Image (tube, rainbow, N blue to C red; front, side, top):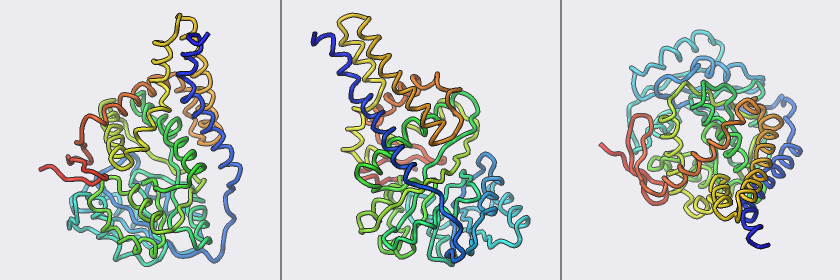
Length: 381
């Protein structure tokens, strides 16, 4: 009798985690509604560190100029080189939106191995307002984005507001594998963390921070030696006693066509970065991964019938939960079209998790780094 139950016991942690993530999502999205417009909206300084061209760069930037927001909005782009390919796009944006406060800072000064953070340090002196938003260059937003994010700052204890991100438009199997990872892994993980312990980190796609909270943790200068600057900024603000809020308004991560190797290389970089940033939690996360659970169930099964039944139960639940996330919460339209890729995505996620323990070198934006204890980095020359 016990041997018959072993494959079902093997899939129980992953199956249970899927159901917990669904419960957390139901609770979160039931609680949050988009805010109504506020005529006394505070001014915002939006910093955009850039390097090179992204997919639909102009449209991504223009989405921040088309906001339904009554307060002042300043948009500051920060580049390290006057020859950067994206600068003509920024110039065109400035010509097209002459009634907007848009500026460009070009400064090659490096303050540490994280070049993105150096761009932010160089741009911050131009920021006019006390609500500072940092968004990745490949992010596009809806017209109600600013109003939604800034509404959280009516609570004086909120030091930072971060946003979930999705990808709705993919360019084949490789980018679909990355996009469904947001829906099937990242978003459920964030919602579970938010529900069970509160957020202690931020997501780099969108971070809105009070200037007071930023200065209290040492400014952007405190992040120059870290690769996961988003995680570190959120964690430092949390440890300083501020609350981190999660905004229900999704931002869109616009990805370009890439090879599977490029996608997997980026996934490995993220995995190794999280391993050194949160070693205990990252190690424990392996228990919830579906692929090793399915593999273990197959190995422990006394007969193929019980193994297949356990795996079918696990993936019946997982496919259903992920479809609900995609259709109801994330609204990325990826499922059910790409649902058949989920088992492959789960297998690659497990191997990425395992490989993250076997090395400390990563590549990022054309540079190579060695990861140090606590998430710090050293650039290789």
